[in-house]
View 1 (cartoon, chains in turn blue, cyan):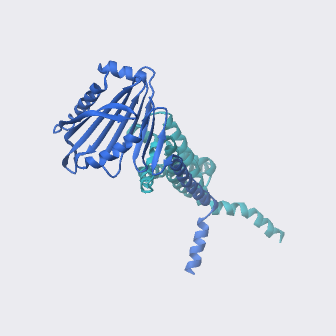
View 2 (cartoon, helix red, strand yellow):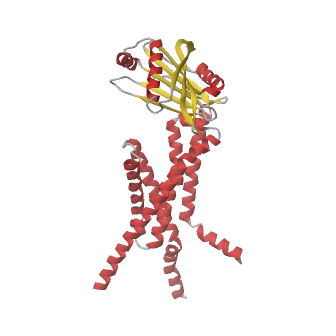
View 3 (cartoon, chains in turn cyan, red):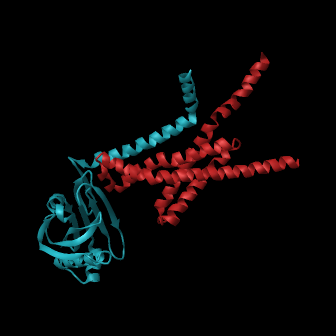
Length: 217
Length: 166
């Protein structure tokens, strides 16, 4: 009797508008996952996701959080920026590519034209951004040199921000690496952030990323 | 005559109150679901080990908006429609659109004034998607709750005529 009642109740629940609502809802969810899956399958290469546009060609792990933006400005020039964050290790990668006009604006604005000066300028700038919100931070220069990026010799500098960030009320040190090179009057800027404790691990991931990246200058 | 007029005006006032409550219910459910569903979608993608597709922002936005359309806007509209349909039997065709508009405008004001969302073409698309979802949901909810009554209404004249023939 109770079973019969429940079935009757269920039957009265599934009237055409409810069925249409459920079909629309499930259709939207399926469409959403269909689009996500199509995006995934059309960009997967082995175990990595592949991206290409007029500025760069790069590959990154499928579980990384990434976002990109192209800033178009007819007066100051165009730039392309991309950031990547790894979910299971403290790793942040930032990439900015300036077009000729944007490079001209950059060099005129800061009065610097060589990659080495740009590296130093960027480190000072980053320190001055962190310092007001965290007065305990100390900048420790670690290493300067050149590195091959997309077939070009780029200038880099690695430094340590002691007490760079706070996690669970514990201040931690952050390793920061800045890479710059100028090719065909276009600046390419790459930044890497990693936790000092896990530096080796995160740096090897970053190296793989860097090795696979091709900048189209 | 006087009594009829006063009854109809009080009914209209009552309907307006129900419409406003229906809009508020839809708005509340939309806000509640919107706080969970977009993050849930992202979390789901990361759990499926394909969170990297967020980088392909145009396609990701399509997938995300479809997900939000189905789970947030349709559902919010459906709930407000159920309330409106349960409390107002007459003029469903005309009245069910209003809770959807209240819901959409309320949400738009929330994101622009409180959340400081920039007024861009993206917001216009968001508005259109939400209005469509809320309207469809509202009508489906309103008609779902009255389906039995509406069905009876359409069946009654035939049954009556059969009885009279007998």
